[in-house]
Amino acid sequence: MKSRIYIIGCGGTIAGRAGAADELLGYQAGEVSVAELIASVPALAEYASIAGEQYCNIDSSSMTEELLTGLSARIQAVADRDDVDGIVVTHGTDSMDETAYFLNLTVHTHKPIVIVGAMRPATAISADGPLNLLEAVRLAACPEAGDYGVLQLMNSSICAARYVEKTDTTHVHAFSDGQLGYVGFMQDGVPVFYQKPLRKHTYTSEWTCQAGKRLPAVWIIYCHIGMSEDLIEAALAAHVEGLVFCGFGHGNLPLYLKEGLEKALGQGVVVVRATRASGGIVSPVPQWPGVVGADNLSPQKARLLLQLILEKTHDPEAVQQYFQLY
Ligand SMILES: NC(=O)CC[C@H](N)C(=O)O
Image 1: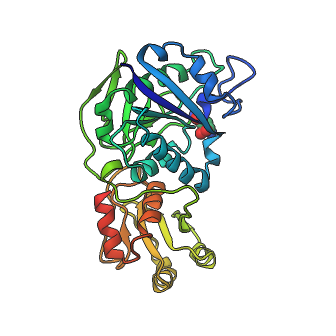
Image 2: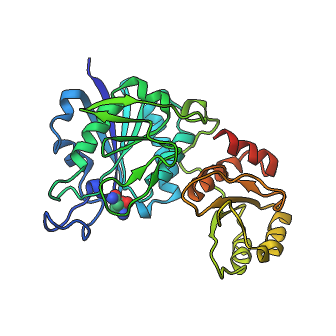
């Protein structure tokens, strides 16, 4: 029997439409329906029996927390169905790293979940969407793919949700698996795996997500020469529960932030140091007591993890331990 793959459409460039085939940037994302996408790749039916739904049809830079939590809950409901073997999520690439990691942390299933997009709109000459979609379906139809947590697939390269990063603004080869390397590749339509992510995910994660779940306010502050300490004041005025700093190098923060940071910590705000460097680990250091290191998570992924951790604890040491596990 063919695998039964359920495709959930969220929009993005894979569903983008432009006025001309050579228009690669001036297009509207989230225009083509998931039904049209499925119909445009008849070969899907050779490898799986396909069903699907439109969850939203947006440019992923407009993804909201409400849509994100609703998507997680929806995918959980689909994954729990006996008549579904794997799930493909079509999604814009701009915030795909965040959605992939959030689903990795909140959907409990052994079934494969593959998030896929494209860099050229559906109307473009040499559009990359159709092949990406076909390969995503073939990957989701492979039961072993469920052992890796949520996977991201584009350009025949398979990334683990925890590590996936957008590393190019416009080119087809837009994603990398950070410093750790791809978990595998699609070779002539067949997944070939090389390594497994070790951090907790999907069926080993301790979080679930109901639709309508409210995530705590956590801001990211980007460090740069001449940055203003007023940003911390603004965050406190907005009653954040957490702050993630996109710090210099090893998550280094300007010393003149010390007073503001101590005030934030004194008010029970959980503070995390991440880095604006493109790779490497940020560890906790004695110079910043009570401040958590983001491990090797990007600031935006550290923020999502912190939002979930804050459900369980506000104790910096316990928060740090979570960052070592996920
Ligand atoms: N290539 C893309 O998908 C980027 C298009 C769009 N900004 C989005 O993320 O939805």
